[in-house]
Image: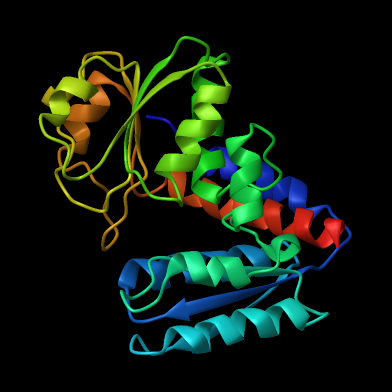
Length: 265
């Protein structure tokens, strides 16, 4: 069992020693329970290490322009050093337009066009928390990622796409899948490492991976991950599951990103 909480604790302990108190503004739209849980965890982590965090909550039927205006207000606020738009957003709101409005210097998730472009070029300054969390877990388990065969079950801008860029830059060969990929097992059974982050229970089963594979469950749905039979997976693989896996480390990396935004400003 790979303990993501242990790695997160090391990072938070280092941040706790920093003589700074940057402020994070989180924009939360709707009543998605997983999103609310992640927001609570980020606020708790910030308070623990002496950082500041506030949440602006909006009804799920809010118009896109109102969210964009809230982002722009955060851009102008001198006491706000980082802005996090909690994903997913409701269907009527374009993630692309929201992140186009976000000031790159305050982008703690690395999702503005400029930050995504730097990641694409292999020169990332700020990575999404989940991406760096997965990278750190693989690095701790393996050291070098060269020649590693990785299957990622997620093709979002928040995890799958930037993760594939980062791992490819480190010398890994990445197969990017999604919920609708046909014959998913064909891609998972050949992999040295499998990362799943769909929020869909049972998308990955123990029989779909070979013995000795590193499996990272970064999915989250009502306190559970993508993998249903965790005990069987744990016996067969090096397994990082939910809870206590990539989630706490993602939160810790977000705090590190907030500090970097503060210093850059």
